[in-house]
Each structure stands twice: as C-alpha cells, then as structure tokens.
Length: 319
Image 1 (cartoon, rainbow, N blue to C red):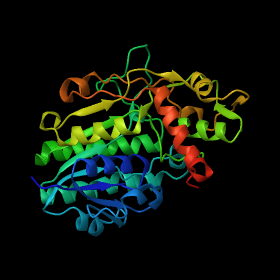
Image 2: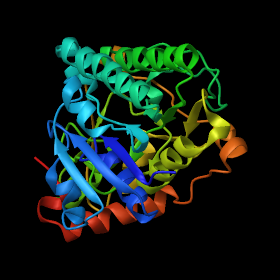
Image 3: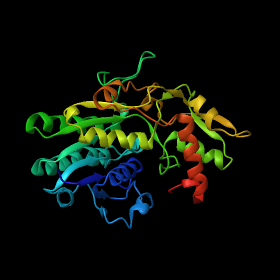
Image 4: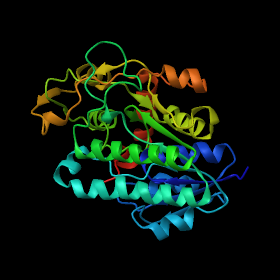
C-alpha cells in the first residue's frame, strides 16, 4: 500500500493535527490549503520535514485538486472547508462553493484515482437533542445555518459516490474540537476564546443564557479518530461520530477556565436561531467498530491549551 496521502485544509486547526498524526505514522503527506482560514504558522513545525509538502491552492479549482490527488495516493483526508457559522449567514454562497463544489472536486479526483476518502463533517448538522442521552449517528439532522447545510450536502454527495461508484468513503462527524493552534479570536472555538481572554485578564463573555452545552473533544483525540476511521475497511460507507460522551454547559466551562478575579458576563446572542442548544455525542459506534475512545480529559486539555498559549506570543492568537 502506498504511504502517500493528501490532507485538504492541512494548515487549518484540525488539519494540522491530522497531518502530524500521519507524519508520526510514517506517511508522506501532501497538504492542500488556500490559507484563507489556515495559516503557515500551523504547519511551520513540518516545514523542514521531507515527508511533508504544502500546496497553496483552492479545493474549488479542479486542476489544483487533480495535481495533489494522484494515482499513488492511498487516502485523501478532506478537511478543506469554510467553517464559520456567522460568515455563512452573511455570505452563504462562499460556503456552498467551498463546501459543496469543493467536495465535488475532491470526490472526482478520488474517483479517477480510486483513492479512499475520509470526509470530515460536523456535529452541527444534528437536530436539537431532547433528552440527556447522547446523539448517535441515527439522530435526526436539521442544519441551522448555511454552514451546516453545506456540510450536510457534501456528506450526501459523498454517500452518492460510495453507493454509485463503490468509492471507499467514510463520513466523520467529530464534536466540538479544541486545543493548540485553534484560533482564539471570535472566529475560534469557545474553549480557546475563553482561555485566551482569561490569560489576558479580560471578561469571559457568554452568548445568551449559557445553558447551551457542548461535548468537547481534544485535538489529538480527534486526529487519531480521523486517521483510524479513514484507513479502516470496517467502516466504509458509514457515518461515525467522535466525542467524549459528556457535555458541559457554557456557564460551567467559563467557571472551569476562569482564574480567580476573572469576570464572567452574559451578552446578547448574535444569531440565537443558529445555536444548537445541546450537543452531547454518543461515541459508541466508533468504539465498537474502531476501538476508538478519547484519552484526554477536558481538565487536562484546557491545561494543555493554557500552557501552549502561554508559550506563544499573543497567547496563540492567529489574527
């Protein structure tokens, strides 16, 4: 089996962790990223690694995708996407073009080369959970933003390629992922935003009542899940969730992150209609089929992120 793989969105937050996981396993990684959301800083640790090559290009361009996905490609990890809920509400076209048309281009390149695909989706496609039980893969979908809608459309397209062309594909829905290299401005994740603001002595601002919950998955656990699932023949054609199986309210998360003396304040939500109230993963399918389970606790993960931010200028901000 070839040891060459492609990672789209390689310079993004999760993409760089997938890249590191693959390099650690001895793969030759061809990264593709247009750097609109990702950053060269995210992959600077691999700059001198002869097994890593970054192509700056756009998944919306078929010729660019065809240049990186070739006959010797063992797998394509497709993470290249627009991921900002607020931006998708303001500019839905950009999310459609990147997340749907871009995915079509990747699937076509993989179909031509018979390359297996790990399509990384999002837990934001799910409908509101109405009980304390976790969300499994059979839970109803109800995208609450153009971002979530475009990601679900990309999944449906990929499923069509699996059934229509026998293209080896797995659809992956990690829950809210956090950790080093995640943006910590308003385009980032809540854990990174809270941690950065706490380190700077700023008020932690909670949108709405703060009762909304999230299942928070550490970056290395997410990357291991994506790599394990993509290479597993046992999950081809499946949808798989990844999460801890535990959720925490944003109010409780703020209390966990806040140092003594840090203020916490509730503010009006920009778009409350796009907020999923409860996100708690049922990861039992991934555990059963892959033997995968998360290793990093929330407390440990937050401490890792805090230490990483303290070691970097601007507390890890990538603005």
